[in-house]
Image: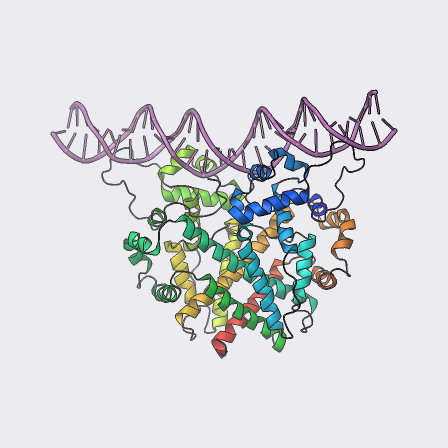
Length: 259
Length: 259
DNA sequence: TCGTACGCTGTACAACGTACGCCGTACAGA
DNA sequence: TCTGTACGGCGTACGTTGTACAGCGTACGA
């Protein structure tokens, strides 16, 4: 299988029991050598590797090497790489801070949720590269869900809207984080600074910002580029977007005027 | 290089000239055999493959096979797979419909932009699997940018906010599309129907929806699951989110009361 | 003490992107 | 018309990935 870095393939029941650390399936008698590793050790090693060098270097061989173990030994504990990534995800979810509610104003509480999630993506940049964040339904994900729902609980939304509102907020943060990560990697892998880039693309830039073919794009693109110092400013996008998100939710919470 | 399915590595100048179909670098004399393929033929073949069978089967070998050509021949026209994906992206952007403005109300115009983008992700499901949508700055991307900006031009936003607002809308649609794609693939690869899944996970479900440990999650999760018939309903998430997005933008456009 | 369950691992396979160098074609210049 | 050479095409090979499989040795249950 040529799996891209996606989570969770294979038997979903097996994945779930693993996430909840339910009894492993042999485990009847305790014959044979005692396990020298553990699921947690493997997940921690993979996490350390991903945090330090990115998801790209997280291969089964590399994780095994970090544990001083043969690559195939990992498969004694984990069904495959997809499940390992699921475990990594659930682990960082479980370790997120669970503060006291940020205040009586739901806006402050939602802002805190958004900021915490943004910080999560900053602490673990590889999160933005995991293609699927499909709810793993592990203990960490559910604890996170429970905690974050509380920020919006009691403001008068029914439960269905409550769930949708949280999904909306988290989706926004994720999009921002991914965009920010894209900018970072783009900057890293092109060894060009801005000046060199503009010089090298001089002839094309005229076409790109052709005010006749693309009147609005050339005008707005120039203005945005000048304001941010580059084509995309993650910080500004987050600040702007969060205000829109809060205003959008306010319309639902404080007015309830639309369906 | 262990590239995941991401776009654009290598020399960005080369990528840009390719996107704009600028003169290829040899092309001084016209010696040697005439090219039997072309960039466009290759991109079209890759697009057909991706549309039909997903991004996972788009390998250089497979694209070459579709063109009845040896794998390495593709490298005569395209520097590598990353650039090929950039070209695929820009091509589908270029082919998006460019309608007349949807009406005098900016809400209708923004809704049309969102719907068109959602349709794009539905027509090309592999788009959701491309990890990076970093602006390729190809002709298609710029034409799309120019066209979509017009939906929000003239409503009283300054250019910087205009750019940010569009980014905000498109980010929302992208998040929805990715989530929807995740649901689809999850359903496909687990051959379990809902009933079997619930039966198999019976013992774990009690823990997962433990009303003592996770009071809010269990309550809201149950309500949302019952309302949608599953854990996540892409259609509902899109409808809900789009209303929030419009309300969030309205707060900026019609009130301009916050910074 | 012995059988066996089970942890561990070496080897191997299929698939990937792509570097390298050869082959043959067909035009530019003579 | 002839020839040198630029260039399209591609066969081979390398390094990397996830992981199937079979064998080996350990340490507990009986």
